[in-house]
Amino acid sequence: MTHHIIDFKDIFFQYPDGTEALKGVSFRIIHGESVGLVGANGAGKSTLLLQMNGYMLPSSGVINIGGVELTKKTRQDIRKKVGVVFQNPDDQLFMPTVFDDVAFGPLNLGMSNERVTDRVNSALQTIGCLDLATKPPHHLSAGKKRAVSIATVLAMEPDILAMDEPSSNLDPKSRRDLIGLLKEFKHTKIIASHDLDLILEVCERCLVIKNGMIVADGRVSGILTNQLLLEENHLELPLSLQKNRIH
Amino acid sequence: MNFDKEYFNLGVLDTLSYKNTLVHRLDPRTKVITTFAFIVTVVSFPKYEIAGLIPFLLFPVVIFALGDIPVWFILKKVLVVSVFAVFIGILNPLFDTHIKYHFLTFPVSGGWVSFFSILLKFFLTMCSALLLISTTSFPGICHALRKLGVPEIFISQLLFLYRYIFVLMEETLRMVRAKDLRSFGKKGQGISIFINLVGTLFVKTIERAERIYHAMLSRGFTGTIHFVLKEGFGKKDFVFMSVTGITLFIFRAYDIVGLIGRLAERMFN
Ligand SMILES: Nc1ncnc2c1ncn2[C@@H]1O[C@H](COP(=O)(O)OP(=O)(O)OP(=O)(O)O)[C@@H](O)[C@H]1O
Ligand SMILES: [Mg+2]
Image (tube, rainbow over all chains, first blue to last red; front, side, top):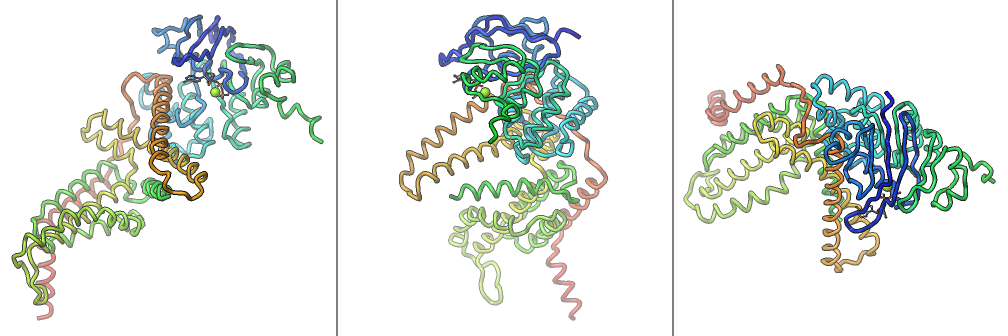
């Protein structure tokens, strides 16, 4: 398969209150690429990710996902291809138990109960949370909630994975596990994060967004070592590249 | 602030319902139906009945024991709400003054008898309802109700309520805490702060609802929520239901206390 391509052409987006959150964003992500999205608070990362499955349609510009132009009509189908993990797991986990939550997507795809159960079990297995299946989400720690919210998306077996701050609230071990998991996921992925070390490990390419515009686009190794660029965007060199700063 | 404690209590009930005992493992439908039958039977006793109700105390006792439920925790809750029963019945002794019984030569008016009957009925029904909640997870109860024919839309509402009441409570808790930490023990600036709190909470809730709806859409929601339901109705449910049903019938149809009394009399003579 070579068609999991994300193509943004000159996207503008305005919130109802008039905030211009995206001002002419263009980029193209090809199949199998993993791309980091970094930028200061309020730069427009979350807004950009929310465009990907058509929750909010751009004010102008064309988004093309897997060869299909994103419109009101096509967004139902595009949602099956693009899995989005939100910034806050409490928004993502809305069902009474972990199992029901992970099963929600597959059931909406119209699968039989047995197949759904298989999918749910394997998704939970992947994130190491099989034993949590019968628990209600509010009995989980923040890290487990995060892991389960990733499972809810994995269970839909999307072609493209979009994640907003996947490592926030995770303890170092869970963060490590998450990085391993993301490395294993071979499909196209786009990850918005302030955790530059995670991006450095998981992604090959990096976009820097500032005030709703892409100001840099290139290989991770080039961008995350460019101290000037990073500091302009309220970022710092990844810790793993800061050895010389330890006294 | 009392809010912390109330939240904690809700959490305890919820945690209890996820235990793993014989009673917890019964199919939720079994428990919903038997609880309902129990309540109907108890309420069906006439106004002046006391003796006939006593044997029914056996049910909560058995469930407390089998379900490993902390007795005091539940009893305290029942006592708190008993205030309502007291209000309902307290006027009976004033209006209904004809003498009904003699208790060790004291005359007891019909009003007092019916008052105690109300209290007893209230105690039994509240106990059984709370025991149902603490032995069956809330989603379990909802699914049982769905299978018993309650419309889909109510069930979804209840399930969302259950999921988000904890999130909402925690949000409130954080805000109340933040306010307390910065008000340095001063009371009195009360109402305007309170209105602000509620307002903020309202806005936050609406925003959250929107995000949740978005999350649902992202995963292909088109109007109905589906579940994979496991069939859990087994032999133990059948046994539990029959035993409860038969006992309820016997306790309702026969005067057990009188029977024991007469038996005792015969033994001593
Ligand atoms: N619902 C909304 N209504 C109006 N403006 C909004 C809304 N959500 C975000 N914005 C604005 O849009 C801009 C981009 O916000 P966005 O949430 O995309 O930033 P972000 O890069 O994800 O920031 P963070 O790193 O804090 O998550 C900001 O100026 C923000 O104030
Ligand atoms: Mg964001």
